[in-house]
Image (tube, rainbow, N blue to C red; front, side):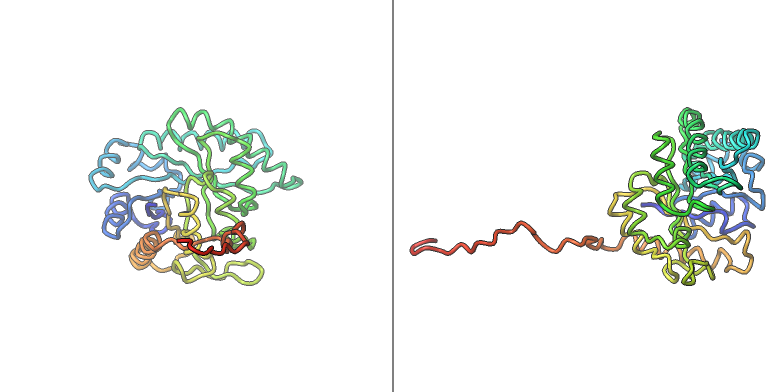
Length: 298
């Protein structure tokens, strides 16, 4: 596994600062979720004006551009709104292709008024299926993140399985799943090879699943260490992206403080000896007959 961080952690940094600090703080890659306050990345001149220069900068620093995060969903019941969201996603896919970025992240979305969970999931799956050929053509994979009204792994499993296209995977965020009481021991085995990206964060929750405060990795209730151990168990070899909503919560510690600690924690957990994650207690079919040696037996 490799490690990276989202620019959501550092909303004040420009592209050069994001890349330079990724090198300095020990990361392999970065996810762009806005730059300098602009969330619509195709409108960011640093990216759109000269994609080749961006690729050269990344290559020079040996940092990978892992994912572009789009503020887009496919949950609307209105055809005009769905068409608008699809057009936005296509813009992100085209930009990702020009930048040599393999992933575009979407939100799972929410259940609309007078709608049902199942109907919404089916509609989102249909929208993803219609976008998959364009993503594949541009050699980009769409990853759908659990969130909103679709926090659990069962919802994400349904979406990816219903689309059944290699250009659509899930972006798994165990911290979001914690809000509905789901543990990584359920999530990771269920999703398995459907996971295209992992967002890692940690927080304290109350008994009802309400997030109380964000914490450093390993200091909250999201079972980050167990999650990483389980990802090893399903042979996940892609990115762990540290996410920290500094853009919306200015009171959170600055990126200069949290990123080095996060990189250290993730490296240590990735390199730690893999524990035996099984309820198996021994050979259930072991012979029960005692074989006695006969006289003269050697």
